Image (cartoon, rainbow, N blue to C red; front, side, top):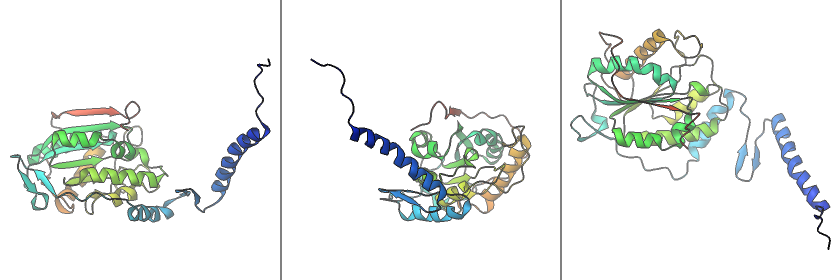
Length: 282
């Protein structure tokens, strides 16, 4: 009885070779072409700069499937009663939630000065280091935090890790999911403090945020720390001064943010620190 293993058939060898060769040819053609490649329901297209960003953003917004019904704009006031968010004025004392990447870790000290000056309370700061839109949008971590801490206003700042991102279509979908999580709560979506020109991530964020809720930070001149990317203490203070002016005068959801008479006050609110390298959330 011959127990020697059977040799693979010639056709099986040919099929295995084609399964490797054809994808490689497709990738090569894709790299040389400006046209989109469609494989089944998936469309692949290169984005070499900002020229295609607006087109992709518009395309995704048009093709959202089964959008959730917009929730009524209600929040909890200081007495625990629900009120219409459209009736909020700049004298309301808010429960502030801070969400972001390492940028919120620097901004929270200046935000703390403004909150203590104006009667607001920071209920929690979430510093998700190295996190991107995918972490914030795809995971249910933010949903759980909002449900637990019941903020009446959210400051959100991230994107410094995504300036060179080119997969804008995927990030747009994640940013839309994040925007869904915020519905019904007044918020300020703060754009990243660019140290270099981005490939369209600011446009993605701005298009996902409600009109009047996105603060474009990329054109600010801020002093930087030794890494050349993050603002230094002086830069964070200047950044927050600009944000506060906007929140009081131009933002959709305004709140009292008068310049603090005293700076560098002790930060006494709780902080959750997450490392995306160890916990991505999805």
